[in-house]
Amino acid sequence: MLEKIIVIVATWVMSVISTMGYGGIVLLMAIESACIPLPSEIIMPFAGFLVFKGVMNLWLVALAGALGCVVGSIPAYYVGMFGGRPLAEKYGKYILLSKKDLDLADHLFDKHGEIIIFIARMLPAVRTFIAFPAGVMRMNMPKFISYTFIGSFIWCWLLAYAGMKFGENWVGLKVYFHQFHYLIVATGLVFVAWYVRRHFKH
Image 1 (cartoon, rainbow, N blue to C red):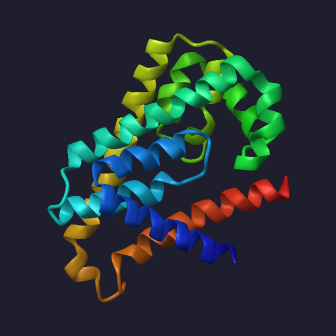
Image 2 (image 1 turned 135 degrees about the vertical axis):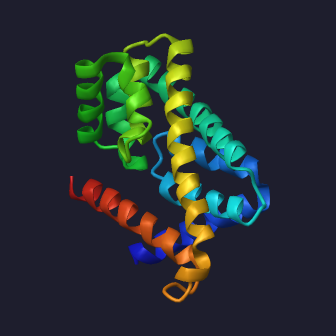
């Protein structure tokens, strides 16, 4: 059942990007950065595949992804700033944000300081909820936005580039896959299944 849901989500992601273009990337990455587990590992490689097809531009794809991350991170920042840890613990479960996630984010922020905002934007899973402790700590907003944008741009560019390079080798690899979509779904499937099951377990 879970696998079917993830396939549906992946198909929806591809439909949004195909229909809305760069605006769809901004929207989807904003959702992902607002502490909602919509994996960028599905979003950006598919956008990269569209770069290979000539529909999009690699740098604009990365820019759209980074802008979406900033847009989605700002609400999460303010939730942390005004609601604090108690609000996140009370309602986080509804978006699969666990106490363990919050503990990890707090630990990383305490250990590495504000630079962790930049680093975490290039780490799977952690990037989804790292904006919250920045708000709790009342990190300087311009610096928060700068770190978020730069780290997210690098992450989005790398994922999109991977999708583009796979597209370039599509002729040689198509014998192994019926559609490129399946590879994207499989990648997201592994990540989301782990993420969801981990939270249900806790």
